[in-house]
Length: 421
Image (spheres, rainbow, N blue to C red):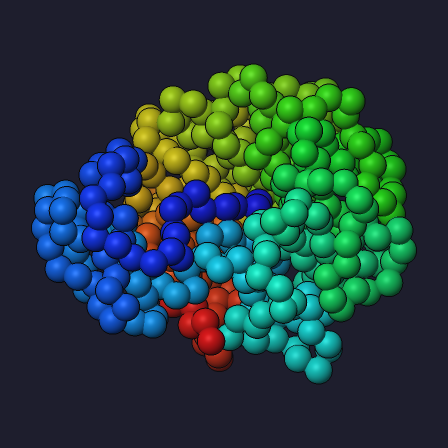
């Protein structure tokens, strides 16, 4: 049920050239590629293959190639969604992968496969753009948007959380409606999406107002709000949030722990202004404002807000830093990226989900994997996954269903490289 996250990196699969190219890497000069078909070419100036003023790293083919001065793994992950006990990823070739638990055919294969630590291909096509993981074990499901903006869902469907107009388990991805979609996320027994106009639709189990309307369940997408222009949709267990075109933050759903951030009922309402990203966890939320400051609210029983307050029902700033880039909320922990590529996690450490050994529980803000530059992170109940600058995927925490990408060990207390076939 974690937030849909898409890596906005230029991981081009085009042939490498040694031509000088302006404007790469956030305006830094560099070459358009450094791979000669066998290895990364050496060089430390713009006319060679490194970034300007830096040497080009040697890469190994075919496991990795050097593009825009950096090594990129063959199955570089560009979109990631961590669910209750399953994980999905889209690679730079637009292939869709899943690993962890296959309960309710969450990995889009029949029940003969109980779980897999090795990523399995979902579908034979190579046209996926975004993906979401939903459900609580064992009732798991997934949804994804293709490059034609069509929405597909599969897995558990007892509460019509797939939006197909029926309640039958779906082993293979099935088309949801005829609209064009831009964003999708899955909750505990429901899902929500934004259409191409930025209008909010939800479907599935509607108890506790989780669909943004009072106690309404539906088997097909239902428009929640007669307003469009929203983006950045995120759905937790029983609540959700999104950002309007004027950068105001809106949240909806059940508010028992103050996770919605307003007292306006279950319907979507404004929480605050000047936000650029938000994440909904099980019963808490965190958001990053336009100035790079981080705010959290809701349940803080495990220190998942990163503040000393008990359980604030309105946003409260986490520290004083203003260089935060992306945040993700899990069940009782949170993780966030800074603009320098450093990764930080805090909250419950009971199952290794923070990614550092020998921490107090709850854990304070703790840097994870300082030897790498991170570009993407997503969290779930007790598992965390992140993507490094080279596109490699790493997972840690609860591994009871192999969702950390390794056979046997659980918990996995430090980042573990997920090996793609």
